[in-house]
Amino acid sequence: MHFEEDLETSKKKIVHESAKFSRIVEILENNREFTTPTYFPSISSYGVKFSMRDSLYLLNFHKYPRLLLSAYDLYNSEPTEKKSLMRIIKEYQGRGFLFVDSGIYESFWKKDSRWDINCYKNLMEQIQPDMYT
Image (cartoon, rainbow, N blue to C red; front, top):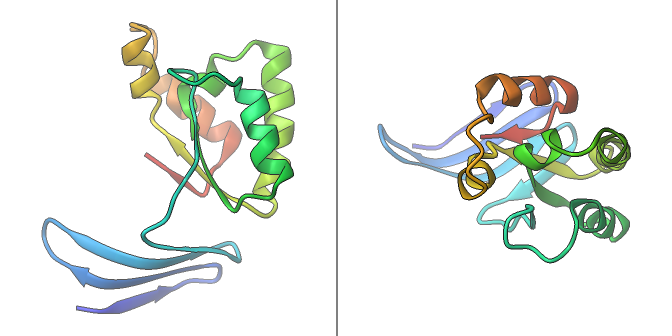
């Protein structure tokens, strides 16, 4: 099965769809596109030697077209750091495709039971990414 969805700024090309699996080959969102398979550099505090701010700055500076950001890390940033991160993110969103994950990976490894759906919803309202899980 093959179909295309075309809204004002959103378009998806799906080459296969079934009850369990779909194969999307292209997504156009707000005049930014990516094809699959694709690579999203992940910015996470767990197991990474660079700070979230440095990683985000580097990807933004080099205009990398896609990035995956940890919701948990952004939500738990210190207020002044979060303000700086949000400024970089807003600049990035002007041209890059932002994917924000659930933050469950980081909260699990840091054994932080305070991370819940309400924290996640609060952050999603602030950041409004192109994609999220």
